[in-house]
Image (cartoon, rainbow, N blue to C red; front, side, top):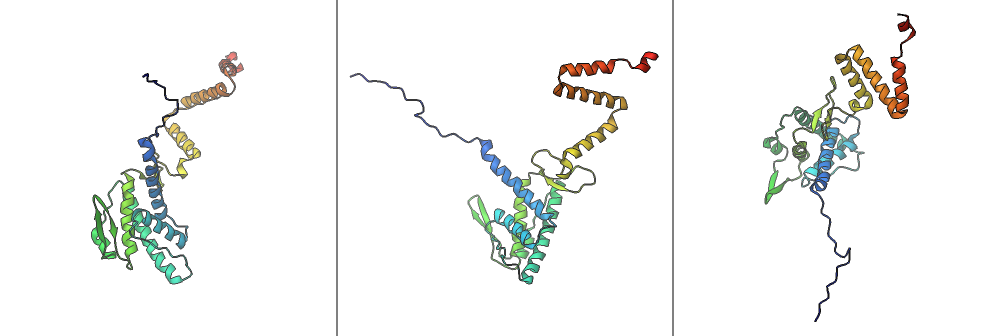
Length: 248
């Protein structure tokens, strides 16, 4: 009995495309950078009102210490609620600034267990295998313990170098760098880059060197936009002796 061998039609075998390691790590990296940026924005925010600051405060705690639930009030008509939250938010901004300043100076920020227990005496660590979570009973100051834990978790995303101070002299801005950026949003514009470029040239180049550089840039512009023939004509016009030179 003969056995007929048939070829499998093309496209009959499907394989699931494997995601690269870089593709898997990119969303996590962006989330960490975004969380660091939100911490810095909250620490130096002086324009937002109390409800917006409370939303940022509760969001950062909820994303990093989810077991310590923060309930942000929806009704801010009661002045007593607004005052109590305002005091807590100002305290939280001061704590975040202190931690960020140390991170910008590449110094460690240590969280003492005694501070946590002072705000939340019933704070406990529930271990689950190699990981776990913090858990506490709602008290008057349990928000503060949750905020300190949130700062500690968020600073793990810093990796020792993302939080940095702007390299521009007399600028105290703090930024979260994605790569090797050294300037804040204000000093990373094209105008600021041009200004720094001119200042460097003024210190390092002689007037003759500046003249030659300007001429080279001009000829490159002509070559790119006008063509080689126009560039050659401009070069000949430059080398042609003037009337004053002929009279000599």
